[in-house]
Image (cartoon, rainbow, N blue to C red; front, side):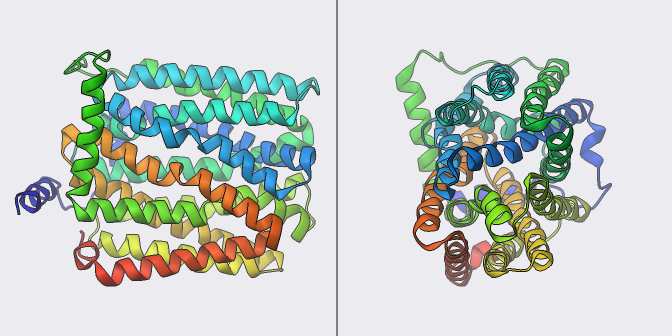
Length: 423
């Protein structure tokens, strides 16, 4: 009962109002960080398109696409939770700076290897793993710092705008990648990503907080760090709604997110497109996700968020099945758009609800679990999708994933009334 009262008090602190669609950008620190993150994400998606095509050229195998996706996301298994503890104990801005510098250097080195034609598959996998480590450590701080930048009042709008900039970069990045293929080749996309990290590093240097961070105990106190991690798990275990939201995020990722990894295979072998065609397919999925995020920003702090989570996840499964079974490019593009739109209306709202439901002291750890539930489930999902694609075909693998999502969301939505009532 005490936990329910605590959650109600936290929800009561969040104003229920609809205001300007971009109000969170009125905060100077958030605006600077938003722009830097957007520019960096554009480069990330340029490389994502180029790297998928590179791996397909090197291996001619959907299985290796899944393995590359596994290497990029596997660090989430063992570093994301640690990143969540760090997000509550150290200066989040400084942690983000260090990880972005390392990731940027890795991207530049890989770009030179591609440019000089000295790249091998193991090198691509190694740099995917390095970038994954940086992202796993930085992710919880990135999510938790949103609250630091705007406060509780504009949190829902800031989360929606974070999703908007990420999804907009999914549209622009692949388009730029298509142009890069034409004028600069694959190496140009890798160089663009390396340079894009400069934007987020500069933005982080420009962000300043009124209060300096003070840790509650030394980072050298391993027992305290371990206890903080255990406290985070106990906190989630005792809050069924929080646990349910995290489980839906994990199922979406495990059975649905591998569609991104498999798109190069669909582009080349199903629709017989080149690298530019792949870029357009990735861009269409990103356009759907961007409009979904923009729609959430327009709605503001809307009611019935629990239904948005469930409906978005259910729709994600439906569109995933439709895309997997389609053999006509136009319809597949429409289904891809729907895939992007629905997954955002589920995952972005889960992000908002979690940040509203948890206490300030646990925000970093819970957000690390949120990232782990989505990013951490991707390695297994990518391997599973790659293995099923190798044996039964990519179309079967994605369709089966969509069926699993629909079944799980239906069961959870039917049995968990309190989740449906979340506002």
